[in-house]
Image 1 (tube, helix red, strand yellow):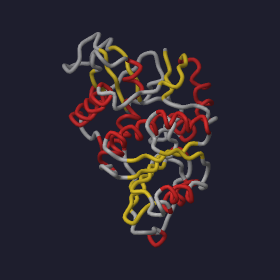
Image 2 (tube, helix red, strand yellow):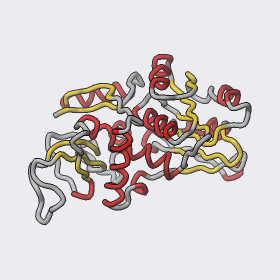
Image 3 (cartoon, rainbow, N blue to C red):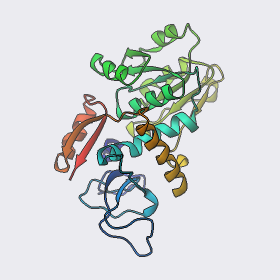
Image 4 (cartoon, rainbow, N blue to C red):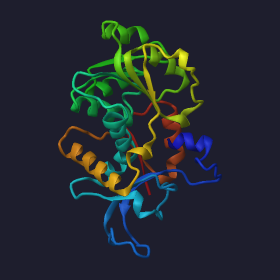
Length: 280
């Protein structure tokens, strides 16, 4: 998301702007009337623009307390991607026992979380990665099958793995390059969950192009946490997944805040796995 907003700007179109929407830290000051937190409390936040900073002013509705048994690194690394994966797998396209899913970018921070949650709910995960090294990462996080593929070359292999039936759900953030191929590997009445509009041009499709009575979902992050109560409830579920060992959070690389530009270059080179963190 950060690299996309750097290229395209914030949803309001404001330029210049400070990037970043999530993080973790300690409360140093409180606004008038704030009773949810005290100075010194550890908090994590999400969707607070300007998070690439040593200090940030954010609304209390964006913040949650960090439990003592959750580290700052894990808290910072799980807010956006964790809530997103939880939204995808439990609400936008609920995965149940026996469901077969296809997860694009399976070695990335979001892909890892989707795979682990699919497995926790009794599903099967087929992961797609761009390199053999990334395939090993996806396997380590529980993928049942991993295919090394770029573009739309995965269709035949996915259909072979499912005896030509197709998968129940595709989690696809690849944009136009994979969108139509993802439609082809869905079973009848399967669901294509498309996300990541900031990665490039949005695919366009006519209703008559949709094969096998499939459904297409474009999940919006805030629909999973429309209120502070929903944010608190769902982050507590996420923290419990971490406590139980069902979710392992992979911190791929760490950078000083001054090296944020290098972090963006590394993301765009497609050589990274897991979650990248910046430290002030």
